[in-house]
Image (cartoon, rainbow, N blue to C red; front, side, top):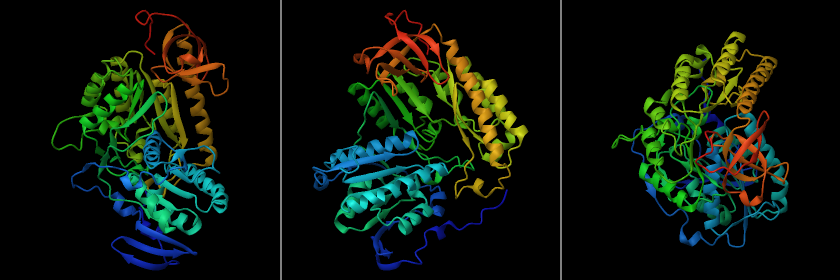
Length: 520
């Protein structure tokens, strides 16, 4: 493996900028006629460090009283790219905006503030954001007083921030994943100074509680921890999300109880690696299994979690999941590759054999378990034989579905400087073969449900047909069926009549809960 020699500090290069002032509050520079206030900039070297100081848990008022009416009569749009963590961050952003008086809109021409909450995990995600910025440039020209901001994982990358400052000077705000709670102050700064405001923290550690959230629908996401310490060689997340830090159990449990009181039907516990929850506590011994066991006793119909790392999936967690109840029979368990040599180069720190043994324990303990996964094809150096190991693992496990990707190098990760000797033709062909295999097992799983009665949480109308309702089973399978719109938001029993590759069809049946053979 080639050694990393790039100096990432060079990506934040102000050689063509004029420094206007510099003090303890940051620096003010001018690039191509645009004044920029850099309160703090991303620092790749800093974000690599895992400091030992205590994590502070702060219970503060996210929107100061003097800023709570600043958006009165104004409208906002938040565009979200990426994972559930980004979706949840957007809920917090919307909550703060609404506390400031802003109202949501879908009409760009009506918007007074537009924020792009970005993802950095793959190159095409970044391309989408820069493409969107290109479209928004014309709107910004028409409405110069509209605020345009870029936040999320892309903002934690030095090269991205520098590119925005150099080439997209019409952007008003750039902030990162660690300082979302600073949004009201950044809006105030951008509104009154008319400068681009950049504040990206690479030194993370604090957990901010009591942030407002705008949740919609029947399902709620609850962050239980932030960051990741795994440093898989292909992944930028440990740099954009920081070190692992867990919320206090009493805060998580109180939030889930409150969601139950509000009538939410389903909660998904979120973390970059939920299985590492509690490992950073030094005053109590309390793991993810303990948290799941406690949440199991809360009166909320369904509890899920994502994402889990096989390396930290211990026997205690397997045992707790076997207790069932509101803990659903669906686990997303990313494997990434079925070959030990590739897993080692990826830095996954488990073997094929360890993964398969975990799958065996889970299937033995959790009746009706459905497993889904993530798989990367075409990792640097992957041979045809190594890819065949991935295919054989997929067949052995029998995943119901998978997120499959062609390897995409992320600047700043060790894998980005490895020799990539797999042709794009080979990568594409492998992806097609992998997807065909996944589809085969997904279809088989759905065929096995034919004639069974399943519990479905009705989420709304089908996207393609307003006369058809759509909902999810406990194992997160999409079900289409005819029914009254009054059923939306409730649980119904559905008898499966037809199996498609990515969803199943059925009809509502009036079966008492106790009699229904509901395991899905």
